[in-house]
Length: 462
Ligand SMILES: [Zn+2]
Ligand SMILES: [Zn+2]
Image (cartoon, rainbow, N blue to C red):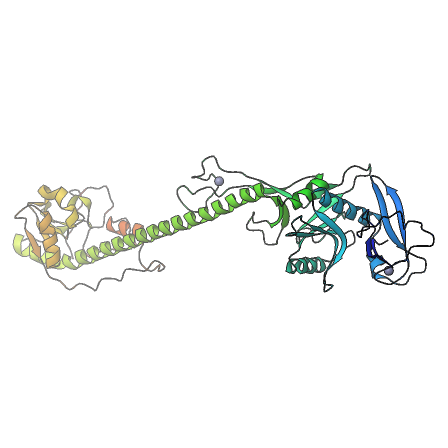
């Protein structure tokens, strides 16, 4: 069946319109004797006007006379389901105040719309395609693109159960109930279901390694809308209250998903898209700040380790000269306590006849708390700078002797990705004599912690 033909006198006629689209009436050519001069626009074969009643519709269409040749227009007719859907689409568009025509072809033949609906002011044209046969994804996309290039909106309608292009172009799936009820749109339209954390400034969901509050990016999802009556859908297209939209949530979805959505749902998605973007910015800023803080802490730890290393070096280098110095002064060989301990400001205590006599390289910053303890002792420094630092913190008149010694060059502070240097724990263990695997300095009594300073067994260096 076809709907458009050529009348010998009136020109183009549209069988679906009561005035045949040219101000005439169907009855005058229906079953007329002699037959009306109707021919096929495509193949030139004679046509008859046919009238049938189908459900709610009075169907009028044109049929090729017997023995018609191969004809594209006739082949395009896809049977009753296709025809009824086209009638529905045109009917609903007209009910919405639009004009609707069947089989409207592009001037250059690049497309041919099943139903072309045009807004009253002519500014919008929408191709309503009743696509009941299988059509490849490539074809349907190419045809949609050609409509877009011509400034024509398009919506594909299908009653097929599985359609490869339902996500790829603006389209809906329809079902015509057996009982003759209204056609329903069953897929292709979506509604957005928003979901937000109770406190939008502090999302409940995992923020992947970032400490502190991260704003909620929204946890809403798209859900299938419908089923709802086809007339409502066509009316919404005409009213521009539903638009084809490529879904942006979830953002990680790679493939494109087109759905018909209303403005309200578009706005809800937009709100989530913005919140997600804001959340990402905040996360990235927080992550960057926290990364810098971690790096700063790591750098400070490395410096701390280096300072401990340097202190141990100085103490080690001073052992021999201090022993000589004290021997000359006190007349007996002194005994050395274990490595730097808190009771002597991390310096190495030197004992003469079992009593504290001197301290090698106490840490200047720890001196004030121990001023009175240190006041009667001789403090040793390895450099003038160290001497000044210690003197500045000690009681006025504190005796601080500098014994200039050859110091090894300071070990380079290891970079963040180097693993050569000792860890803080190792350095501190060494400082506190817990690391028995090596002897920090010659001649020191390397005893465990908790044995107390005075109790540390003095020992004559060899
Ligand atoms: Zn024909
Ligand atoms: Zn949240």
